[in-house]
Amino acid sequence: MIKFNKVLENIKTYEAGKPIELVVREFGIAPEDVVKLASNENPIGTSPAVAQAIKANAAKAHLYPDDSMFELKAALSEKFDVQDKNIIIGAGSDQVLEFISRAVLDEDSSVLMSAVTFAMYEIYAKQMGAKVLRTASYEHKYDEFMEAFHMRKPKIVYICTPNNPTGDATSKEEVLDMIKAMHKDAIIVVDGAYMEYAAAKDTKYAITPKDLLGYENVIYLGTFSKAYGLGGMRVGYGIAQAELIEELSKMRPPFNISTLSLAAAIAACKEVGFVEESIALHQVQIKRYEEFANENGLKFIDSYTNFITYLFDETLDSTKISDALLQRGVIIRNLASYGMNAVRITIGTQKQNDIFFKHFKEVIA
Ligand SMILES: *Cc1c(COP(=O)(O)O)cnc(C)c1O
Image (cartoon, rainbow, N blue to C red; front, side, top):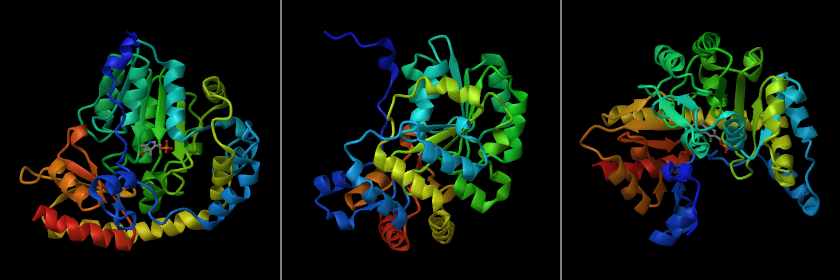
């Protein structure tokens, strides 16, 4: 019998948002009738310039990509006013999380995060045998973080702002206060996967990589998967001081991003118009979700992301509601596995949202 590493006993496989293909297979619904609002993807797709760049690079499929990622790093360093040596690229920012975890964690260490936050922080920590510490609140509360930090001395602190799967955000001022009050032995990860949406909503929440570059133990993470519409291409980045990036780079396998992904991300960096257009659509559509909740007596968390979290009271069950919607071809995210009687809905296009409201109204009636 194979003896797997003991740490695997405590790890639950990450439950990804259900794919459209599954709904087609299981419920016999035509793919064009399935509405997927479960994985925080960009509902309008990706920009034409990106699609063009992917096509143009198809002829290079037999060549390994440029492992220095020179062009992408140049585009990012221009965008964020940092230097190449401050940047590490991952297959999604997920992979950068993995590099960080593997670089500092072991069985005697711990990581600190809020009560409800991105599930991969826990999985990567447990892969290293590290302990997972959580504050009492899903929001990133200064006092709760400080108390746990000084008592338990975690090696990594996660500040997910805006936070997934809740949608709330932590202000730049609060994040900087926490960073300044924590000693420099811990890596502080500021995960800005949805930062484009928060920055557009209220500048108080806007954090740039440059804001954090003065701190040797802080790394900012960003991704092309959300606002940029490149979830399928798997590109993310970490930005920090050169010494930290150099250490993390030892964990990076060569050619971790494909030629097509590199080309797509480079094109996406250069085209700000698409992100602006996506956010403008989003800001109109999310209002409909807030109005719907208010009209139907539902609670929701004020969102700084491209999704909204509806909180149910005991008269509604998030699992039953998610399952009933799934059978109707509408995929949303049930938050029962996070210990919340709540659902997370990615804001779709006008048409997708129309379909969602129609079915959701019937299901909660
Ligand atoms: C989506 C997401 C990521 C990373 O996504 P990738 O597709 O791996 O870049 C990281 N953090 C949070 C909070 C996310 O929601």
